[in-house]
Image (cartoon, rainbow, N blue to C red; front, side, top):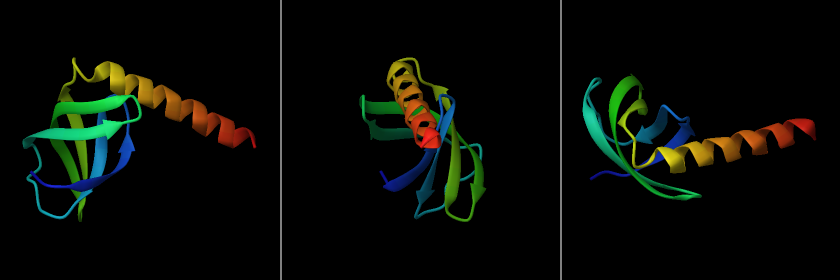
Length: 84
């Protein structure tokens, strides 16, 4: 297990800053907590730029509702901030 910091999230994937190298196309298990609850999901490493990695969710049935709810809430918050 390794720790990282998330940068972006969408319904299809997430990006994170990691301290170690992970090969592109590797399947990894991700565990993180969102405002609507904990998420445990498998993802494929799709891209790497220095220590920033892009992961595409490959199995998110159990976590998809939490991820979708979080993404919707973030979109609403960003829209409201854009109106200010």
